[in-house]
Length: 239
Image (cartoon, rainbow, N blue to C red):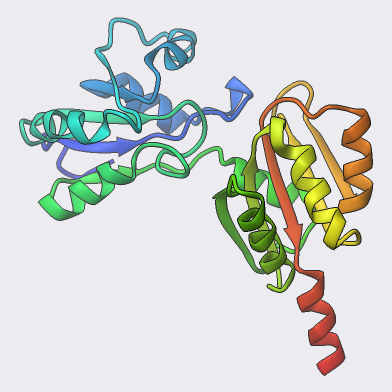
């Protein structure tokens, strides 16, 4: 917590990526003490807050489409002494979610803010994939256009370590087939529904995973990982 409890501030609060039990004690404390809670979707956050016994707390929406318009009001509230908790639908605010503009505005205007540690689909998938963790990068959602999508994946094969992406279940098969056509032996992992009841990790080559998901349509939230075998082979040859 900030040393000056009387001063207003923002607190970015990670929320569970699936399993409600993953909320931290510190996150609960902040949510209970906050003057108001800025939510990516108030309807999505309400069940979690209710389960935590947090009711009657002012909730305001703060998402990609209204963040620029809503932010001045929240900044004024922080300057007036309010503690504003920022939550998204799941995981760490600002990581492929609203929150980045909040942090930038706080830095520019000298308004205190804190970032709590907590659930992260990116790190959970990385460790669970069994792929190299000594070097990794997260690139958000893969591009929509096929040419650019393939280019990003091919680049990932040339970089030592692991590349991590979010991908839509509706595009996952097409993405695997695109990669398998050019690089069938590329090692990949499709991590689905992390921390939830039907959590699964599918590991294999692009060709193997494309064949599997052609028979089993992918569902749920997905993290897609590619490991840079080409870079590893090149380094070994040089040694």
